[in-house]
Length: 412
Ligand SMILES: NC(=O)c1ccc[n+]([C@@H]2O[C@H](COP(=O)([O-])OP(=O)(O)OC[C@H]3O[C@@H](n4cnc5c(N)ncnc54)[C@H](O)[C@@H]3O)[C@@H](O)[C@H]2O)c1
Image 1 (cartoon, helix red, strand yellow):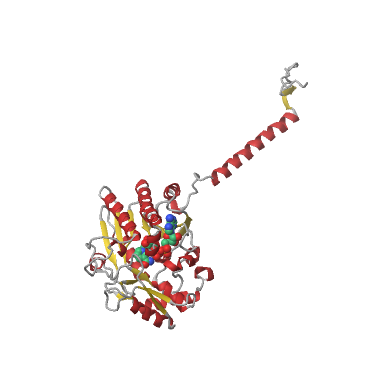
Image 2: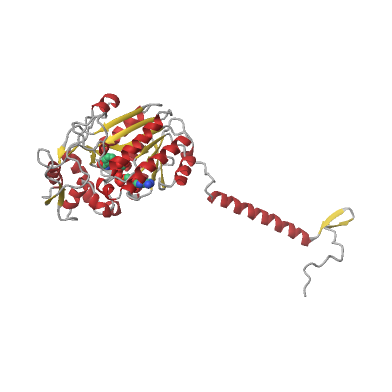
């Protein structure tokens, strides 16, 4: 048997031998020493590499320092329709932008367009993350120095919300709470929140002012109202500057044709009227389904206040510029003019040049007859009015992008 615990029987030889006053290092020992140094060096290199790749190693970047004269805006949902247009406008106006999106509904193609337009370092970064993941949200806030947040990210289809309400409460209400908590924890003091006219429900009196009671009638509107309530309660004990924008129905796209609205094909059935109109005009669907012709409106179809996305993002920039610590501003963002679905379809036919086939169907659950805004408060306080919105022109611009992007950003 081998004796592994063998005791040393002879004394260990000396490490160096002295010849006439000179130290002579045994060559075997010398190569041992070099080996040890090499080993230590490679271990240090491995440690540095591992640290660099580890989550806690923060590479210095302009995105994680507050730079004088530069406002860094976190745009949640910036790969989506409105968020991408807002990011473009912010970048054009020299803001620094971080987009956070889980791409569940948005398009990486929109982010790529923005990256190509603003390739300079320190202008735009994209972070793929889900706002429903508190660890990810906290990491984003601890690794970046934001000055403001524009919180667009949300699921946003009334019809879908009636079928899957929990998804809406989670994605809208709970995620907004998470964003707010992260802002408070990391000292980010300006919030521009995307709310909706769906929080008003179906008020008896038109037009809708900001003081119209909020009585939402579908989970989408309720989830947004709850998110607003959380923000408002929080605002009472903070010096955060808060702007809540309640948008009406958003149409149009970038007049220069760089960005457009490209919902995922599987969401088509929940989609908005403009998307359905364009799909019918392109022959992707056989006809346009108009849901509800017996509402108490002048032609029996629903009335909505359509607002061009360019005007809407302008309202966001004005809100950001006018946001004041410890103040909450709540504004309707609409034109103040209601247009019926039938009028919309006529404008869409003219804009596309296609005689779209219409199928009239019963009402859709959760829809309301007539909704249009009183936009006088935003005009008075932020000096904002809709400059570009014109049903036919806005649709014509959007159609221009749709025609060239039959498969959304996939075909750009
Ligand atoms: N489009 C309208 O007519 C309208 C009207 C009123 C209010 N709004 C509000 O405007 C905002 C933007 O709407 P939109 O039309 O651009 O919708 P959109 O679906 O095009 O964009 C929403 C974006 O949010 C992202 N997102 C969703 N959940 C996320 C999550 N958990 N984590 C990270 N990213 C997530 C999606 O991937 C998508 O890119 C929404 O808050 C919506 O409620 C829209």
